[in-house]
Image (tube, rainbow, N blue to C red; front, side):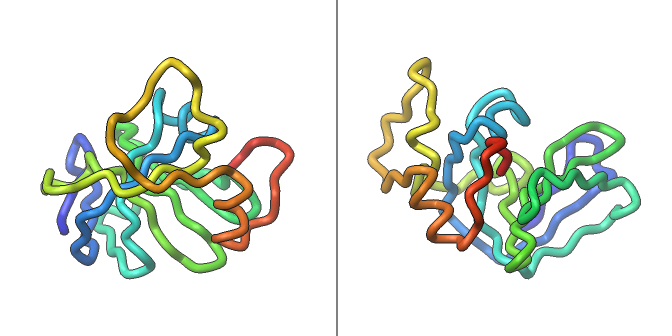
Length: 139
């Protein structure tokens, strides 16, 4: 898959994927103004324009990146595994399906998705990815 930031300064290439997940954690909602809809791309992601990427250490075990020129959110990365979760809107392909929702216990009542997907709570997500609980709400 191929994608880019809004201004084109950063491009992203990733193995093909069709599933996206929705993250309802408070940090994703604060970062993007709503749930993060992301493609789990794994560790084999390449970027061009890396001098335009700014990285923010959002916790001890993850980081988030954005284009420093236009502000486009580029990825959420799990540091222990090197796996990237890239916002679906970055990719040119729109042939995705919503396959899962995480941090469902943190989702506010003001929106719902009609899609029937597996739903994981914060505790289930942390156990699945082996991440330590974070009392600050950062992910």
